[in-house]
Length: 385
Image 1 (cartoon, rainbow, N blue to C red):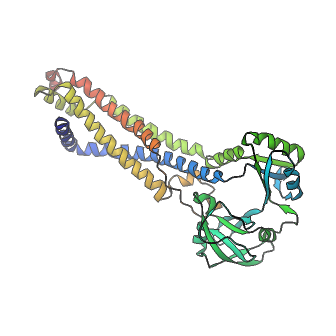
Image 2: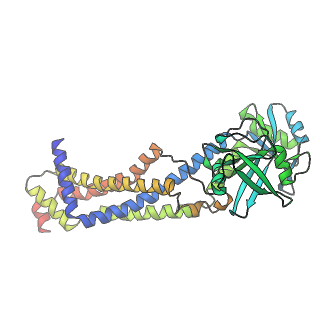
Image 3: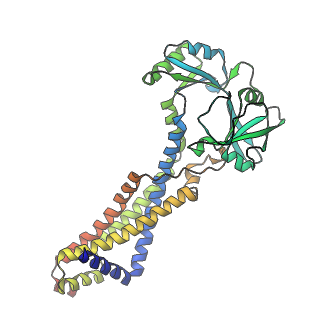
């Protein structure tokens, strides 16, 4: 242990003598790791957000289509669906999108029957009367309101309607609730001007989860103008939404990988004349090959580990503190759909280990291998050049 501590101390001194070169390598390496960490953390954060969203999604959503487009569904469709064997709870849903020209953002207006919701209330309660609403934290922030405050919306007849905010809610995923406005079902029908006896879609519970496709096929046969959507199809839809600009993201990823490969290749092709002379002197004064390799191992580990930690920290701050301001325009081209939201901080140990293995290990290897070639050469030959 004492021997290795002395070798580490000498390695730090050696790197200090080449401080400008070491600093340049650490800077370039940190940028590469930061880019890779940002992409991996951003992808994992979006996957986490999607998992939270889909955790409470219905087993089956039934929509009605007219001319290949989503249309309102008659309430009698629910009664027909309830008669299908294996079908559990069937509930009509009332919802729609509302564009606010003042904040230039779209909100999701969702109806509630007053029962419990999987959303966690931050403060207040769920709306129960016609003049009440509950809003997501993002809506509350952008509208500068909260429990006990007021919210003005313009309905389908172009009339301003004043609602009392009785609750501000949240969920495990800020993406799920950030743009949400919750109103009683009958209020949503009046707000959007839906015809009587019509709903937006129908949420269906299926007892046997292995028979979702069978249940969807039965609904389609019973209601030819319907479009049953299973939970698995919703998962694929979210994957498409989150990755619709994945080509640009992969371009950034490829550029980072290429830059790192160039850096590693440059290191692996050989060491400088000064480093070779240093190895020759160490061999001449009594260092054996294993000690020289230990020295170069610690030099490579110090540089790569420092760069890895700085790059990972920079990537984490970029994604979760500064809201991925570099990647968000690439991935969230549709961000105007809702107010700004913050990704839930999440650092997967497996992801960190994978990133360390893909960055630290190749650099250390590319440092030790050329040093080994020089260490097994006669010291006099090395010092003569």
